[in-house]
Image (cartoon, rainbow, N blue to C red; front, top):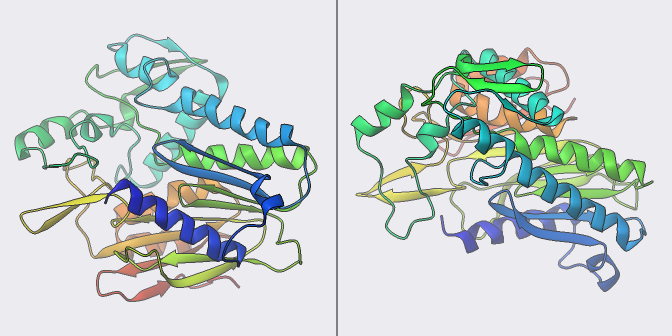
Length: 327
């Protein structure tokens, strides 16, 4: 998918969520937008706030981008991956997020794995002439993927396999959205919409007391039109879908949700998985985890969890809701 298309999808989701065709001038001044975490992000505060509050959002986002990015050479994650197995001292928050990633890796039995970096390094979905890696290269990279290679001692993190590498891309935006919410609430904000590249988290309701209406995109619809929507207040909605980043080669679609066991895109009958729950980190991790588990195992997992709803869209364009959906 081209970058401009992805931006348009985010814009469409924002307009549906706010229920308007555009933002008034005073609302534009209360929106922080940026390009971080390999996507377009925005924080829209509906209450009246000082500009310093939005500056605080920017400071937080840039701090976490520098801390968690796999491609930033100075980040905690990059330093761990380059250390060749030697322990690296990192921040408390980095340790906390890595432990969360290990938790979901264990929960999925390795279907989801935060040491996917060696596989991720083989794929470039933004290239003009993108091509899949050879089966031999994919298999070699996948052989280094195992969350069990992560060793944590206090604030020091190492990888027992020097060829391994951590990628927090499937959990970082959720964690950051939760921290933005904490910060804004401490500033007295009661109504806001955080959108980190389609990872949506709301604070309270809209100003008129009604729920936000968050659209779930119709798979492969370039206009970003929703196929359905969910109503939320003070919750998060996160979608993992094969149409978000992909390329076609010889008539086959190669998407960005990579299977750590094969080194290739996950091959099942799903187009997307959307999770609705209170924590954006939980929603972020579960959307990817459930996609990798597949429809049957993923839906079974959701139905065992409290206060978690899900929408699965299968490749026949059928929409499937979890058993207790939004009760």
